[in-house]
Length: 140
Length: 379
Ligand SMILES: [Zn+2]
Image 1 (spheres, rainbow over the protein chains, first blue to last red):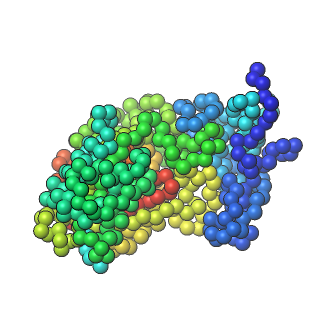
Image 2 (cartoon, rainbow over the protein chains, first blue to last red):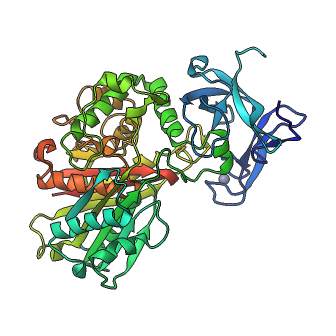
Image 3 (cartoon, each protein chain N blue to C red):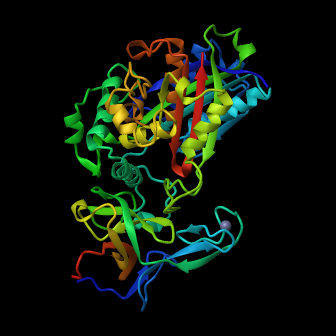
């Protein structure tokens, strides 16, 4: 068992997770409604500093996915892993890692829930990351 | 506005050359292009170099071996579209009478394995989202879900590429591969197997670009640049390293925009193109881009390829010398390699893979940062 002193997100501002339901934080333009993840202050369409952070629905539809077998540069997790694009009802598509190691557990169009889970442990810190978990899958 | 032509092209073979550095590769390509144009560096008024992974003044270091004539040298880095972006700078300068002759040289010694430095934030790399094949695989998987594109169609494209490359002395992979061999190869990023993805490698290519009036005194086989376009992505293109995109953007993709601008500039349409080199960084990309460049309706790229429409002798032959899948991708040189290949096609010098009577050809390169270049050449 690895000793863990604290839990930290892989990057601040990507998701809400402490003491509340996991939700992704996107930036939304107060002028045109454009949304961006991760959040940023300038709107990509208006090119003005008109964005403010909002959380989005924690459930979306899986559009497509893939399975990676060899670790890419800088990766600190284990292989294989799967990743996919989820489309949220607010009208934004976001790329993320799924909880599944095999593509047979994934179906295009299936509902995925945003959860926050361990990404890797380093220097006695547990780094946490948002992941997509199939909704149909029971709690385990 | 002056008419702009290609007066000479040259390539160093694409592959792995452990005993050569980038200077050696770039030198060979530039020397061959100058020889092809019957020029020395003394006739060149400006040089543009294209490279991604060297540090500083790489173009200066490459050209030094060919002479030190004191001309302006500009180093261009625009990921996979570096070479075509550099061509665009030379094209614009000559069109606007700034210069009469410019040399563009691209060269690369690629790092081994997955290419680093595609612009990912460190949290993307740590968590596994910083992987280029993930983007390529997701794009084609969505295409499969939406339009019924099949794994066999992807394998067909990889097999076609390898068959075409057998006769290309500049390609890295020159061995035929059957559809089964492609399908049964190691799965890298589902649905893409090892042979459906290009390999980064070493290589160089160069192009001499010239005012048409001036070119007459050097070459009898000038090839006209009818269009040279660079566009970058808007939010709808979820390209490396973007993490999100709007679900239904009300505007075309960057490849569609670049193609549209190029067709307008050339007063031509996709139906006029006789042969094209397009960014087949993976087999799925060839399908997707064949649609976005207007060569077939959206969703039909896989089926049309499988029906032979994009093979030599087909309606619109694509990547007839093996493309990036078989040449490999020395990033800074890659799109100049495309331009050299289509120049040979238009001159009728492409040998076994010559597309008979080719008059109009297109090169398309697209990559990190969401750069998309379309260049159209005519004879
Ligand atoms: Zn806005």
